[in-house]
Length: 76
Image 1 (cartoon, rainbow, N blue to C red):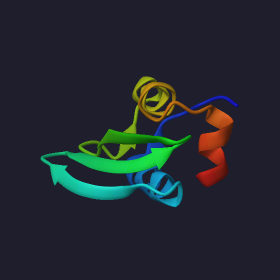
Image 2 (cartoon, rainbow, N blue to C red):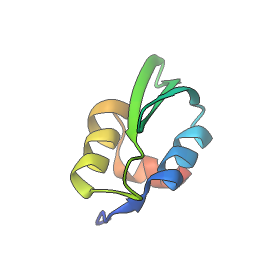
Image 3 (cartoon, rainbow, N blue to C red):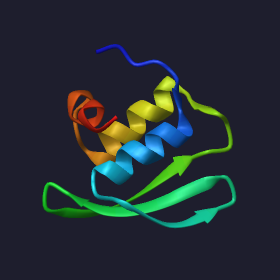
Image 4 (spheres, one colour):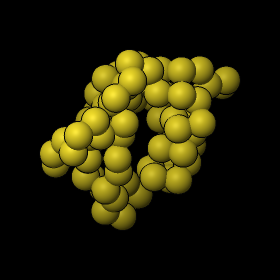
C-alpha cells in the first residue's frame, strides 16, 4: 500500500483504536502510551500541521510503533 499525507487527527484516532491512550500534549505534539506486541511504547505524534508527511508517518509506523503498514491501516 502506498502511503500519502494523512490528517494528523486521524492518525491519533487510529492509534487510540490500537489501544494507546493520550498522556498529554506538549506544544504541538501528542504523547501517547500503549502496549503493542507485548512491549510498552511511548510515541510522539506531531499535530502542528494538518497533515503528517509521508516520511514522518513511515517513522511513526515502522520505528515508533514497530508494526507493518498493513497492521496500521487495519485500525485506520
